[in-house]
Length: 539
Image 1 (cartoon, rainbow, N blue to C red):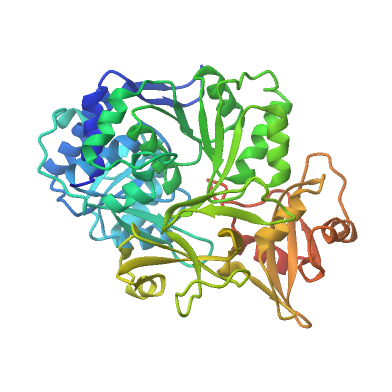
Image 2: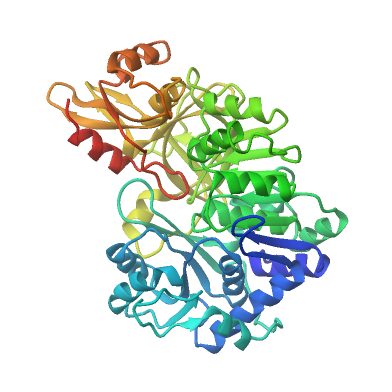
């Protein structure tokens, strides 16, 4: 039995060809709008796949997606999978040097890019000598650098709408580049079969995984419509693309926007009767709360069933604010990574007092990073997962050896997250080991302090970092964005607020007020920026 993502998608298409598959909205009601059925999306993906094959891109070669959200993004991913070409996500915020690194590290043979990025692509391309085929989405601005790129519309017309591709395999690859919070981006290499079970829940993230590839389409045919998935972060982050594929595996409708704008998100939730929204932490949930308290206060969110976050936590305080506005919604803090897929969901009693607690799946353990043996309850270790895990990091044998290991005949991935486990098997995530602050011999994890600070009534967003200190080695610094109109708190006020929630050594010793907190487009923390801001501030 082969679990190949393109084969599985085509089986769903054949089961429900006329069902709505994908809705793209630029600005709901005013901007561009496209609606595709499963048959139409399949034909569109076939066209781009045949164009790539006809242009000489071979199975196993890598194609970069340097794009904002749009039909073209998911169409191209599907086209790559159909033609056994490996899709590679590209962070659209990268500038020339970062793009050169990624294009070369990933050995990109082809690139699909938004016209807005023409000048950046043109600057990086001469040093990415393996990159030989470019496809441009949209028209470049007047005065942009000339590039020998094929317009996406022409590539579509040139390719056949029929399938006709060679047999595929569960060993075909899917690469997810992850920037992380430190170091250069790394390409996580997944076999598609492993990604299907770890990242896509085996066709049923909340139920029993399928026992055969054929069962996926059988379930879709037997079920009805009614679920609308809305991944709001950029598709260039693995979580959003995987959310879209979860929707496809259910034979349901997926809605996407070009960019995250809270008012537009709420308009779409109301207009499209969205049932399931995915986002990244408070950085995306808080603007939705502000909009619901302001210009969008009458938005009908009655169809909304769940809001889930991965990559960053929805803090206890912010969750409560949203729950008061949309009482029937279920808020889920999911835990996972590019190296593991999905590991578990936070318990109801997670929060500043008890920490970020998750009930993990049977393939997840907290282990000693040196021996790889499970730690005793209460001891600190690193989260690890076995079974369907990636092959390693592309072009990086050293980091692969540091992260992936064999034990008891199974392959494991050792994640960067430090954690403890209790007698009942509930895991408390402490934070990324790379961000741990060593202050006076004690270890402080930024996420725990951030949770406490976010419960302060004047704090809108916050990042915590360690700053070199002559006495303590490092001290805990909080870089805070205040709520609009909130008075500037003193360091003593912030410390007093935290003392009821945190041990003394975790209390911030420095407070820096920033106009805005810098995060990635998906809301992930930029700890390098926070550390630089805190280190450069007056004390």
